[in-house]
Length: 56
Image (cartoon, rainbow, N blue to C red; front, side, top):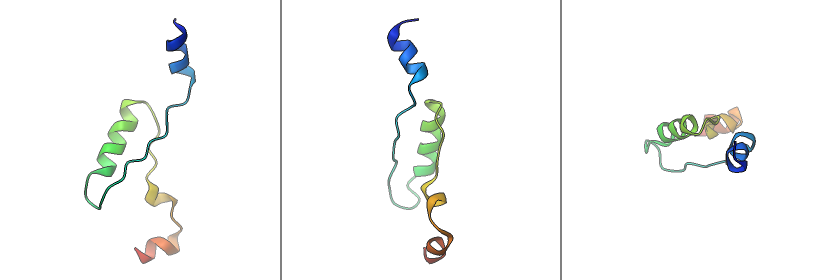
């Protein structure tokens, strides 16, 4: 296996942020991108405290 190929297997995938207005497809794009690069998808809404979510 080449050095570049072994690095691809051992290095963590890059972190990416998908931003946009409500209903623009961020979740759809984010999930598809994560699947395509074998990464974990994290929805930013899940990172907000409950009190802040209630205000949204």
